[in-house]
Length: 433
Image 1 (cartoon, rainbow, N blue to C red):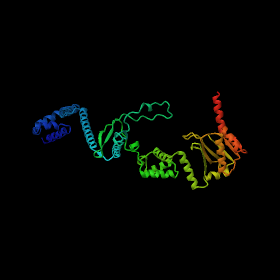
Image 2: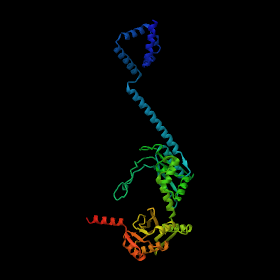
Image 3: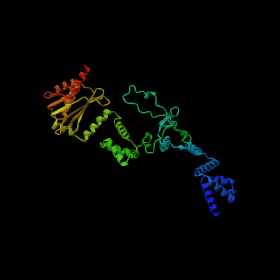
Image 4: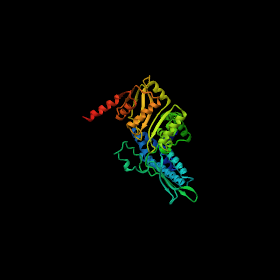
């Protein structure tokens, strides 16, 4: 009897592991008060079954118990997953509502402070913003009273920017997808503060990862110390790509650096534009004069037209003048460079030193390629080099240049550049096919 009772206890423990304890709970204490005969009969009936039927019976019992528990195979897990999803959705909506109420109750001392708050807010969430609409006071007042900030992917690109016809550059990839994220702030004149008038925290695009969020435009910010250091390196004539490599090696990556290569180029370009704000010609002449004051051996001359505009300019530094005295027997006089925004030819005087390396003897820019312009240029070149004439001069065969050489460099052997001759012959043969 004790042995059978032990087996009965083992069976009861196994049934509890298989999920039959729910049935025991429904029966209350009645299942514990069953007599030993009922337990023996139930066990003997299992013992009389074959092994396969016993396994089927066990499986049937488990499935039956599972049915009483309220679960049926995978449907139970799907129901549980759906419930978890509903809970997560409710938590997300609750957090969104709390954020909405918190932002709508904020005030700012200025619109710049509101922009910085919203920019930092979007950076934490993986996207960037831009300034959209602004409204000013009526009448003579130009005070800004309304400012709207939107997601950088808000709106849609205009159709004129989607047409590739008549464009020398390829179209940029489309990035705007009509995102509805925005923040609107208005000025309260009575209190002198900016309050949030509208806020929409709704996006329809993928968000950037933590290592990517520093690259959008609104999050790329240069510090004052970085700008000062970049301009100092630029003033020391350090190449821009070397400046970028220096910052990247110092910080470890572009993300920690905070700006990109083109940001450095744009910064240097803006600083150069400030130098020529009073006029590019006057700025160029002022730079030449300052170099002349620092180095008396620096040579430059310029010529103005009747309206006071820069017509021609020639300059050369002391090293170029010394190089011409040593290696100026053969001089190349080329006027085919017209790569500046004004279309003015850039004319370098170059030669070859004893190491077969190109050396520059002087440079000039002219506005008109006429015989009088070339005569003035050759006379100025000889004046800068103590009237020393080259033994041979090579040009591209320009008619006005040939006439000027015959007038100024009478005894100098004039040769044509073989590269230009080959180019003209090739273009002529192609045109006459």
